[in-house]
View 1 (spheres, rainbow, N blue to C red):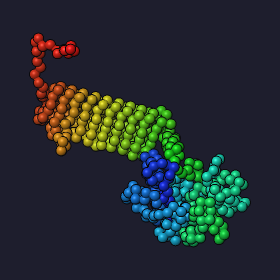
View 2: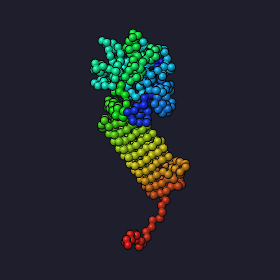
View 3: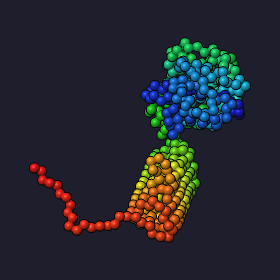
Length: 458
């Protein structure tokens, strides 16, 4: 079945008491994205005509986290069960298309798994996503008569014989919308939880002779929800292991697949190497032959071919060209651009600056709000003084400049092409091209001077 025009309802009203947090459960993060964010992304991949999110606990926090989500919000003021939650979305559902129900705390369901469920159900069948698990404790069981599904029984309501069933209900289902609305109106809460179970619609479908079909996910982790920090941590490791395997299959060399964290989108060329403990956030691209050293953090960064990012570097919102050397212990802040062949060494910070081709700042420097030309050498201890306490100003360093150690460039200022600044210079005026400029106090030696000594105690 084509999902075009599909209704999707995402249940995200629960408090998540076992999370022991004031943050609504669906806003807890997995791989840098909230649980609900993962589910919304998957849902949008199905191009639904109606996308409804049912919220309850911390509703305003959830809505605030997705200010441009283009979804319809429905509120469940009392948490009276999954059936009651879906009832809150009924007014927004289009009868002409089926309704798919997802859960805001089940973040890793693959879109292909959902498409298979939609295809099996079509427009006139109730489709259930089920799974066979070794330990079904806590899950609703799929009860069959022969091969046909007859009902779902919740764990707390199951008999000992039903407890032995290892086919479980994941909660994810798709149903013809007119039937779903009718069945929701017929739900009762005479059960151990005194709740309106969405799963009870299965019995209603059987009674109405509506065909019930099932499909299964390729991986059990796709149907695992988050109810505690331990479960969240376990899913995080599963997710990261899956991403690491994807990288290995694509030809990336990982020093240790168990020690990498991808919290966004990581793309790459060929012959890329990633050492242990690296974190990739947002959108990161590593060019052909790029090398990322241990414990580097890259967020929204483009790294060119054959560039080396050494150990313990922190790069954010930066563009790094080809055959560049960064670090170790370097920091690129937003707006940093390193052109091909540039070198940024240990304990160098670059912010909102362009470092030209072949230019170097090899140690202990701060370059902020600057345009640095080609083949420039920036000595140790050099800083651009770009902020006067109220406003920021730009420093211009033209091609082939040599800046001696411990130099301060008081912006706005320009160092002309080919200029040399002597060590210890505090530059407050433009430096002319191809000349030596320096400013330092006269060195003096005081004959006969003696260092003070401590007086003996009385």
